[in-house]
Image 1 (cartoon, helix red, strand yellow):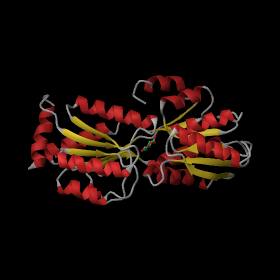
Image 2 (tube, helix red, strand yellow):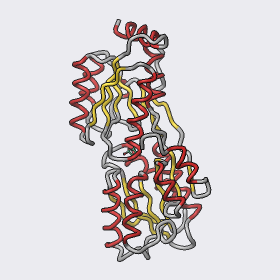
Image 3 (tube, helix red, strand yellow):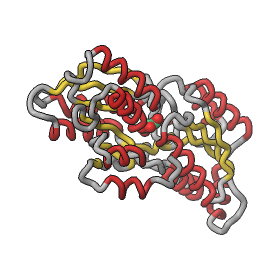
Image 4 (cartoon, helix red, strand yellow):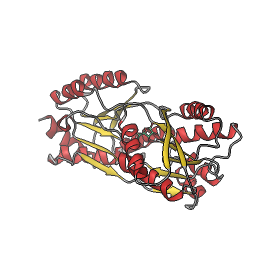
Length: 314
Ligand code: GZL
């Protein structure tokens, strides 16, 4: 019954009828990309007349679980969840299912049964790592290439899958080896601090050929550390990362970064469309709605790409 009521209401949305209420449990604002995802989600909800109840978990799973329980208690019509880590969601997702409130995952995955959520909107995180790794295979200097890796939040699906993908790509290549790997928690400050420790441990940058960072924000923090050590990022140490935030294109234009793999901040658009057709006509969406992963390098007019993205809320 609830589904039909919401379906009729969402269908009426196209005629500017009353808003539906959707809870959004967002991880936090740890990166420029995350800030853009929040901005885009708010815009997409506003365009559809959706009443979006927003919760910022400050990267703590317990806050996300509490937010979902609160949304259930409020009787929202649907829940968007960007899960900070992949495990520990079964019971709260069961509660949402019990309450007949559909949950849509945004940008990260959970280990729970697929029956506990309507669909997941995101990129192929393993493929992103493979694209980044293949760029390095194709562009590394002659000889040995010792790589340091800044991983995302420990236990998150992007950290797990982007590590796997990069290793898939370099596996068959000669002379590429990951020699140090540590989480920078997807933040610029984390990237800077860990890169400083890598440089200290390696006695400088002479033995580091490349940095692979699971997101651009950690790469940007690392670039600062590399410069402060008197080393030339983008030349002495190649920099490849993921997200395609505006500032990485500025760094590319200055020769300080080499490649990024784009992750769209608009996961909410496809999520709202899937919810609308599910509610209006009971159409079950696929369990995974995949977004694109495009490689950008210094050859792709970085300042033009910066201009395209600079006002999107990063
Ligand atoms: C990946 C997404 C990641 C971004 C980071 O899908 O969850 O989280 O790559 C963000 O910038 O912190």
